[in-house]
Length: 149
Image (cartoon, rainbow, N blue to C red; front, side, top):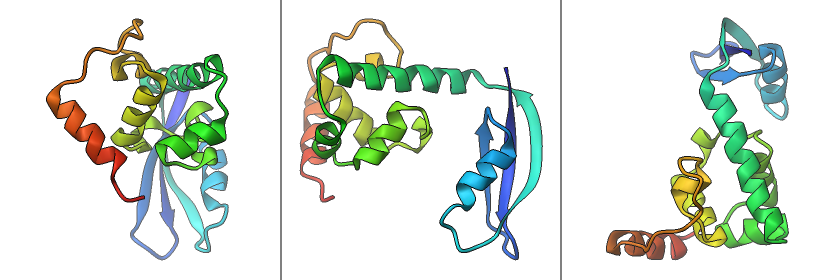
């Protein structure tokens, strides 16, 4: 499967976004342009083999959705419990949001909510068993739970 690495810039500015997509870069440009008052321009496109990471992210996104559905949980409930919008969680579950753009704390909260290990959530193991939390992990979880939103 082929993909693209693209460079999109704001006309009249030196600001650029470098990204990767499995779709035509013009489609990504149109998606990014939506709701932005500045005119975006596709500056450069590099065809490439679709990185293994894109396939990996889709597999993880599928796992996120499956974990929620298997537990008969509504997206709005889980989103509220982990501190994101239902739209954000939906984008995570359908692969529209790169997991590189998801806060580590959000992924950790999902793993805790679904009572699976972070390794299982991220596809590093097929065993969903959650090992006992270390003292450090317990402290981090307490910080995440009490962090301002």
